[in-house]
Each structure stands twice: as structure tokens, then as C-alpha cells.
Image (cartoon, rainbow, N blue to C red; front, side, top):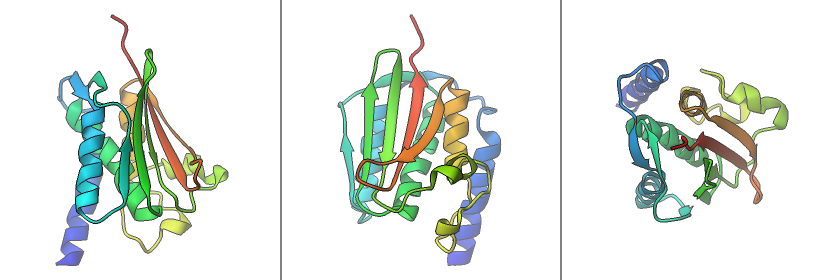
Length: 171
């Protein structure tokens, strides 16, 4: 049963990756803070040490389901490959919105960060922990399709810091 569940998850992630930017989901106002708070709450309910730090609302026109899928992948990546606690935040900087997901694990070496967002790539430290190598690729594709970017760096407390930068449309 566990093998079947893992295969279903891999197929689902592959379809998500292939579908990203090609689906017909309309752009509508989406509350990124609410999405992150829900992801943090769900992870906490599952026994993970996760905290959200940020405003109660940050609304931005996005494809809501795609945003949730991308952010969920960043959180799952922090929980699976990092170490607790995972920290989620969002900042409204006027012309852009910055979402950060950080963990306290070993992080990703600077030389490996560009490769880490490529599809089907699993870095050596991630081997043996499951996954399809698509989580960061899906998040990166979503950010780019939204006119933004996904940056990987070192978290201040150690571990990986994934920063999704999304532009705020003028008007």
C-alpha cells in the first residue's frame, strides 16, 4: 500500500509539473497569507513543528490552486528534507510580494541550488527520503508563470531558505 501511495504521489507531481502554466485556471484575488496559515496549521496538526509569521492577509491576483500547489511543495520540501522548525512568512513590499519558507536542516550548497530546481533532480542529501524531484521545479515554474522568481539561499538560522518573489500588477 505504501508503494502504491508513493507511485500515485509521483504521478500526481509529474502531472502537476507538466500542467503548470497550461491549465485554464483563471487569475483571481488570492490570499497568500491564508494559504500559508492553512499549510502551517495542517503541518502542525500532522505533528510537524511549523510556524507562520506575517500579516493576516496579503491578497494578490493569482491562479489560486496553482499557488497553493506551489507553496505546498515548498512546505513539503522543508518538512521532508530539512529539520524543524519550518518557518513560513509573507511580506507585502508594495510592488512585489515575498513568500519565504525556511527550515533548519543542512540546506543546499550554493553550487547545487540552480540544479535543485530542475525537474526530476534529487540531490544526494535528499536520497532515500522519498520524493520525485519535482517539488522545487513546480514552485519555480509557478513563480515564473506568475512573472516572478524562486530563489534558494541559506536561512539565517541554518537550512534552506526558499524565497518566492511575485510581482504586484499595477493598477
